[in-house]
Length: 107
Image 1 (cartoon, rainbow, N blue to C red):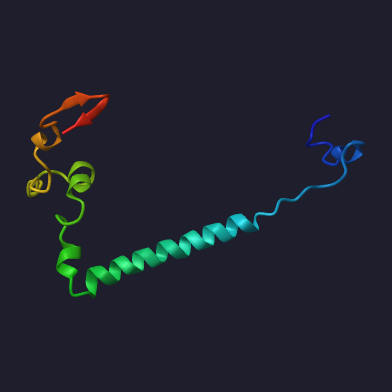
Image 2 (cartoon, rainbow, N blue to C red; image 1 turned 90 degrees about the vertical axis):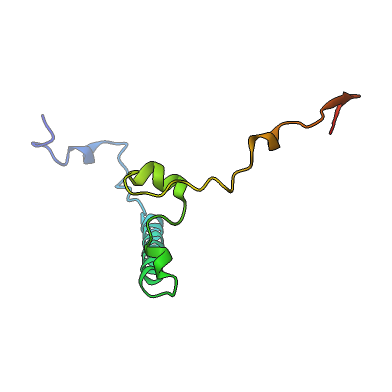
C-alpha cells in the first residue's frame, strides 16, 4: 500500500484528531514592516542624492566611510588615498612615566 493508493488512510489512525493549521500572521506583519522601512530608507537615499543641497556629497563615491568602501566595495583604481590625519600617533598610547606604587599605576 502506498500513499498514492490510499490518500485518506491517515484518517483511520486513532491518534489523528484533526488538522493543525499554523498562524503565520505575525510573520507576514514583520515582513511588511521591514519592507516599508526598507522602502523608506531607499526613498530617503534617493531624495538626499538627487534633491538636496548636499547632492555633490551624496553623489561622490569617495565620501562617507572610506575605510570600508575602499576595502570591500571599490577598487583602488583612481581612488584618493585614505586620510590618516585623524589617527593619533602611536606614542600617544605608550606610557610616559610608569611607576608602580602599592599596586597602582601612577603617571
